[in-house]
Image (cartoon, rainbow, N blue to C red; front, side, top):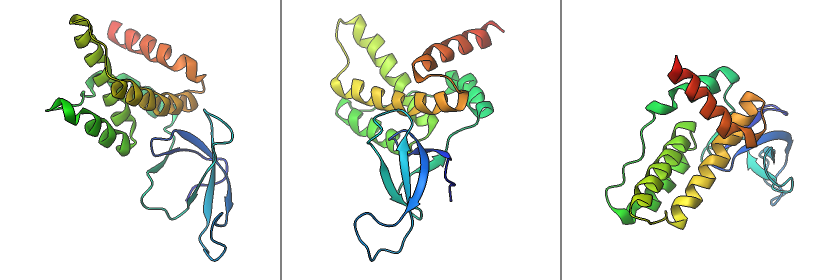
Length: 170
């Protein structure tokens, strides 16, 4: 169980703070406790309420600073997603997003970047689906890294680039 003030990842919706516990907002006879989750990056009104004992939702703590740095260092080794048939691409992205792990998010991002590079060679652009899933993955991953590293979300991509350059340089 998370405590009030904990920073958590809620599925692929991003980073939230557990702001309080509450009873069911819908059913007064429901005796379960609910987390009231407030988004850290996003509109303040996008509050989520979910049962504390919800086993379907992927809820996990935000990684620590040390875990975030180690994860960034390991990003080059994270595999891109393999899509056997073009029409399965959206389903592959959706399944990766549902995993809600940092590794799954970077796999989506790396896959779309690679696809964008390949399509540019033939003067094409990625599909809206590619762009949408990349945006969702970045929102979730960069939001988590922003909190873990205590930097603005707008600075996360540049932080990653600089970190990877310094690791590659030795």
